[in-house]
Length: 76
Image 1 (cartoon, rainbow, N blue to C red):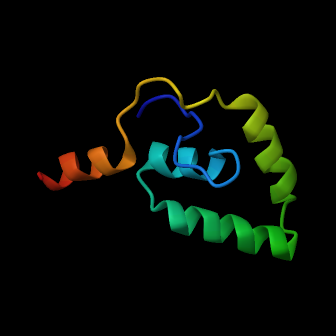
Image 2: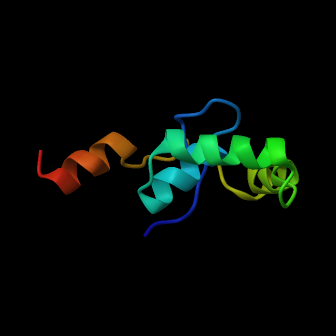
C-alpha cells in the first residue's frame, strides 16, 4: 500500500476518495458511510474529516488512478 493522500477525484477535499483509493474500496461507499456517521453524530466524523484534510498531502503528485488500479487488478 502506498502513502495515504487526498485524491484528485474529489467532491469536497478528496479525503473520502483518498481513503477509498488507498484501501481499494468503492468511493461511493466511503462517502455514504461518512455521510451516515455525520448525520448520526457518531464519533464526530466532521472533525475527523477536517483533521484528515489538514494532515493528508494533496493528490496532485503523479499517482495511478483508482480506475487504473482496478483495471490492473482485473487484468484489463
